[in-house]
Image (cartoon, helix red, strand yellow):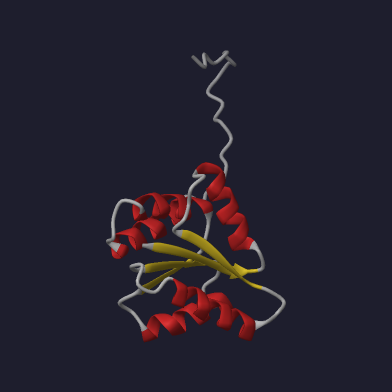
Length: 142
């Protein structure tokens, strides 16, 4: 199974770079950016990348934004080949970490999709300040 990250600008490349800091070896994960070269250039590079992955099992594509050009271009190809491609949006590092680890252990792409969506959503939260319960006490960190 391969994972392809797509985004506006270099967001997907940054997420992949962070992933590689944690998992040095990531041969099944790649990135494809929509650049200022335009949509037609992106289409050509997307088709080339998908062709290069042909015969290597299913492909999970993670896009940055629902309804954005990278998402829409992949979605058009998903409609042509639904047995080979899956598409999720809201690309973030927790999503890739969980999906990447799981994808290395299984070929069940639908299970990886569920994990990616769940991890992506749970990876978004707001920081909460600690509650003051009374007089300050030193916390024992050990």
